[in-house]
Length: 532
Image 1 (cartoon, helix red, strand yellow):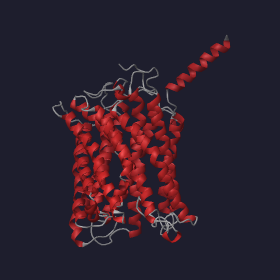
Image 2 (tube, rainbow, N blue to C red):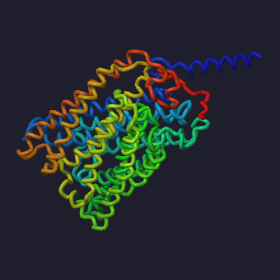
Image 3 (cartoon, rainbow, N blue to C red):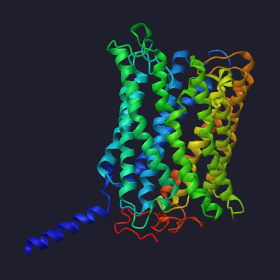
Image 4 (cartoon, rainbow, N blue to C red):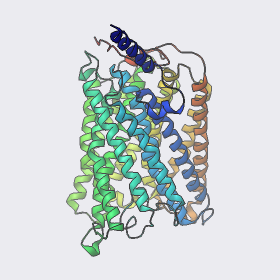
């Protein structure tokens, strides 16, 4: 008898320990709770965003005036490279993964992610990857300086010994991404609440499911590319060396076969966030739910057949150029469907302009602008003029900053009250929005003009005629960088305290995450909810 009571007592003790997180650092080190891991990802990505932003400030300070002003050209190249790598792999992707960790189980009524131990592991290898990458900057000869696309032979024949660290760091980031993606897929497929059919899934969950498949498809391709770079550099192979029978253009094909789906990995979750926020503040159902799911799937499939639009100037056969031109134009159609559906959702809705909605509307306008400059770049003969100029920089920063990062900001403001139980300081948040909106356009819009006038990218100096524009761009850059410190203040203050919020924070919000208390309890949905 006693053994049974002991057993029960043990279970009760275990259960208690289960409900209250451990204290101190160990809680975060050993945690398998999706909310803790989500928070870790988000804090990590914010840290990386600020480090990557500091590097961008170095770039813009150097380009404020013509002539070599502040830093060595070689260090400038290191900054452009590491800024790109950190923003892509350290800021945008972990931020979306953090949002997925936090929100996907809540949205589908699951108690946790399906593979909680792997979840912990997939986060904790990331800090090490980025410590390795940042440590390479302190090596003799400095860090990687061949651009985030690390084209051979710049990354093989002409690089320093930092290449090994860089490759190792990329491998670890890739492993983390694959583990995270497997976890998301298994969670969504297996742990949905009873009654949650596929066409009842929230769009954020759909976009993440499709993103996870993209990650599993292309991360091994990147791993292959960096491994070939490693062996070319250190083990005398010649995959990308024409003298040994290789081909430097093959590198570009392999890289962009990963690289183009990668840019969709960085935008599909953003579409999911916007598709969640716009209906909330329009007080309407999302217009065309099914077409949004199909559009997301078709974007993901088409993302595999457009890669060589990055390579129009490499001497491709005309048939190849035509194929990639038309394929790129085709992928803009489902994206246009999405924009139409967001606008149609807002149409005649009872809109209130809360902070998440402000970021979402800015996203729709500015992301669409970035999409149109992408269509300009897709026109092969025109691309010969635009290629490797600041026009390209303008294009991808409109889709990555006013696209991906604005959507992350929108998502953070939308769910922050749910995570903390406190309302953030709305005045400060609106200041953050308006300063970011104005400065981001002062920063990136003039780049279209200097690009069309022929200013090459990734160069620390420029011709005199670009001086005025660059001064304006740099001022916009510094204003945008400083505005993000406001975000840090808002988040910090919100985590510390503020006005308490109810379970359903926003009027018009729908979904399971608004049925649990605010702040979200440490364990949710231990008995799955019934979906009617």
